[in-house]
Image (cartoon, rainbow, N blue to C red; front, side, top):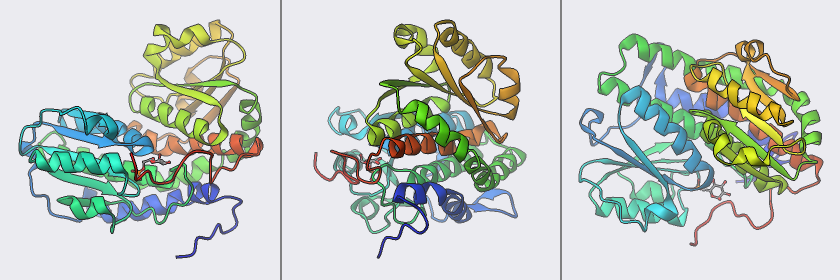
Length: 368
Ligand code: G6P
């Protein structure tokens, strides 16, 4: 294999721009487009109907994909999900009832802590299912079920296309679970599958905001600290945005649940700390707007990532609003990954950082 940046300056840029294609490819593997149904490309050795719990463990960006899927499995399939970073899960001796599902998410399939968690779960008689990008990896070999992401080789240390492909697979699994458990009707399923099918096109549309984001990145590069806020699935995405930014630009960033703002981070708000708010127009949009008002009242400068409806409804002065296409709120975190990745990328590039090889970080952490 020879890695090739194509027309891009960095692998990370190439991989961000590849997402419509690789998410589409992954989707084609998991859904039947004409039937409007999820069609898993493997047999399951368990029935979602009988599960009492799913335990998810993963590290880094893969963990945040898992955290987004918790909202999906709980909302769409009514299965309780517990989730932990693998370095905690492997040592905390969590009681696991035999016959439940342990789910792992990993780009490389080699991360030491995730692999150790997989082995622990197997020894505790869990059904094991791993969402991995490398089908020949150790985790793929040792898992009862392998759900492959078809992101292709990811070279950039900061994960981008693997993340959105993980989300695509996890949402497909949650929809399959919802159907098996009788939570989703055939129409519900079709609506969700249609929303998923629209995602690659919406991601391409989202890329058109790149120039606006590039200009904003110059502002962001002056910050010492950046706060990211979101609710629901936008909360783990806020953490992913903060993770991306700190990994490649070395600007300190934190992702917080918007509702936790008043329990701490509000103390830090002033005109020097940009606040990036991810708020698609959904059932909790208004709640996030009131958090933005709290930020604005303290002179905080807001960069709002929302959709057309949200942009009309906020009635707030923001430093900038990045308007995404309107999508089904269930798939919003997949589409909104694009602006948060581009924001981190352009900030780091503007600051002259090596975005493909950030200091102290490794693509795959195979030692503890
Ligand atoms: C490292 C990488 C991250 C990745 C994490 C988990 O920290 O820099 O991009 O999310 O490991 O890796 P995995 O291969 O298990 O997804």
